[in-house]
Length: 109
Length: 115
Image (cartoon, rainbow over all chains, first blue to last red; front, side):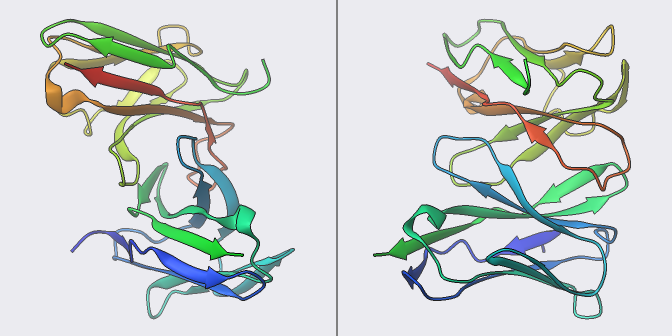
């Protein structure tokens, strides 16, 4: 079992709908969690970070963390075609980040 | 510059050739990471520096891979006797501190193709 797991997708969502991305993690990953967005041919960029159980909202993005169930999710409201990208989930372990393989999200106009 | 700078952007090497990839992190950033990213995969950890000290090199695939950051700023990843399986994008990232809770700033990467 990988330490950070994501469904590779692609996840296809109509424009204007809510996109829901999920990630599960192992016991080794415990401190902090991050969602990065990566456009094709580009480097990852941070979307959200979350450290405590519950929800964290930033504009159209909401990160949810459930440590008991060991999952973290990212919701994107009012999805736009520009949100089409690969979303990488990463968990912190001391100084290091453990990365999932990413979920490819496609927003259909 | 304001961001993490990597060079070259693209590198084509013949099998057996040595290559050197450069990373210039954001000034003042303590932590520097090298990652290898294969197509359709997430970044795979290679090595970590805290200032000039290489604290973790557990992700380096073989002894053909070597990294250094002698003055705690610019870092070089060297791959000796390149093999086809070394073909990937090599990403460098830096962060201000070393707590594991910091935002990582990535460079644009070096796409290495070994023929």
